[in-house]
Amino acid sequence: MREGKDWPLSVHHLNELLLISSLVLLIAVAAVRVSSRSGLPSLLLYLGIGVVIGQDGLFHVKFDDVELTQVIGYAALVVILAEGGLGTKWKEVRPALPLAAVLSTVGVAVSIGVTASAAHFLIGLEWRQAVIVGAVVSSTDAAAVFSVLRRVPLPSRVTGALEAESGFNDAPVVIVVVALSAAGPAEHWYILVGEIALELAIGAVIGLVVGWAGAYGLRHVALPASGLYPIAVMAIAVAAYACGATAHGSGFLAVYIASMILGNSRLPHAPANRGFAEGLGWIAQIGMFVLLGLLVTPHDLGADFLPAVIVGLVLTVVARPLSVLVSLAPFRIPWQEQALMSWAGLRGAVPIILATIPMVHQVESSLRIFNIVFILVVVYTLVQGPTLPWLAKALRLGVPSGAADLGIESAPLERLRGHLLSVAIPSGSKMHGVEVAELRLPPGSAVTLVVRDDKSFVPLPSTVLRRGDELLVVATDPVRDAAERRLRAVGQGGKLADWLGTGGPDNRPGGRPGSGGAGTGARAGGKRT
Image (cartoon, rainbow, N blue to C red; front, side, top):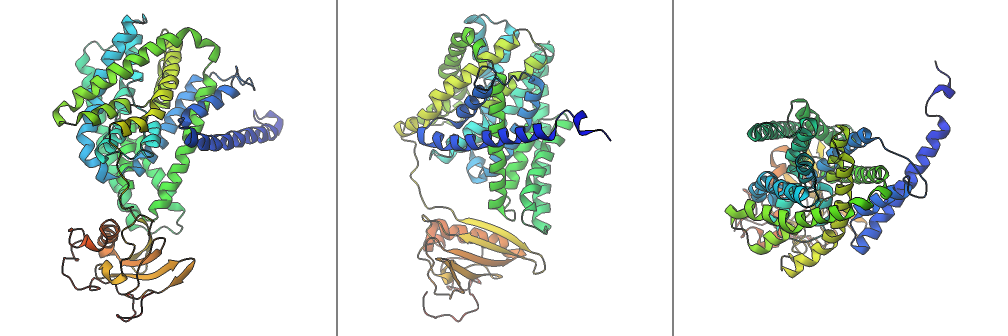
């Protein structure tokens, strides 16, 4: 056994590293608060932390390991895509899938062509380097899009298209950048197009299979501890990436599709799953941006500032709008939505990570490519991120807040072959004022307990539900999904849910109140609570 002094990292150094890491995380968490108040995207603050720590900053930490940065960046991107997929609502994305698919393929091709032409003719890059720059900056950043759009109330078609595009377009861009960096332009362009199509198809199939199999397993196997479910969900998402990449498909597309399936499968402890993934997503973003800030050398950026601004201007006001116009032409999307989608093509860490690929392959002028991309991302994120809510308001695309959706968490009851649903009634829910009997839950399910003002009681059929209540609903396996659909329908439509056709198969208009298993074991007609 080797002595402790022979190890490259001693306990003392480990303690220092842990202290610095914890301080960086705390500062980054505080930066989120500053970001939310000032409107500045948090990614810029994280990059700033890395620059301050770096060799031109206060602590003079020298870091130039490009390969390590690329590996960590890929790992962080997998976690970010998994978190984004878990939080994506299928009902919003489904109508927008054709739009997102065209934007992430045809739109990317248009953007690459226009931006590469600008990089070649306006700033003098050779065609190979120019096309690499065009490809790198044509990918919208999932972390930036998810964080900004979920704070801006937009039409579901716009939000769904932009979120799905940011999850989809990483895959073709990575393939193009790797192909150009490794061997230069393909001899025949259609060979590269065929490779992209094949890798996307493989990634999509693997994502569907892994996501469906993982959701099926988690719904039918009761784990001994609730904390194991979030770990299992993330492990399945990462496995989707690994399987996709191993099969020479798009691992990024596989992880996003698998995560989206998991996030919309009503898994046990779904809110805990999303909370765990969100925490990992924040850690991944913080680590990735700080590392990228460490990698950059600020005193080398001055010569490339103007070229980066020129390329970014063409990308923002010409390439992105043109790609949106060409991609969405068959769909007859209103011009206001097209204008917002053009401005919402947010860039972030993904282009900077992709800019490390030509550096790893030692492509000529790769350092200049990295500097141009870094400056472009910083400058135009400062411009686009804070102005997006203003533009949405100017285009009258803001969506007024409607009825809030219920927070429903499910825990399996293995011996009873059922589920215990924990239902939180938010302030905007239309379930406020509805009697328990008027829920009309399907037979085999019942409201067993109500928690109100930190006190719990067994409700009567005539108990009136209020905002802030938490309900415990027991449902057998066959009716578990129907019970959750019914609860969400009442949360959105209130007592009119039956007449609006949202009451589920066993809850038809004119049905007898309380006949759907909504009883609680107490006699009907009791005193209201």
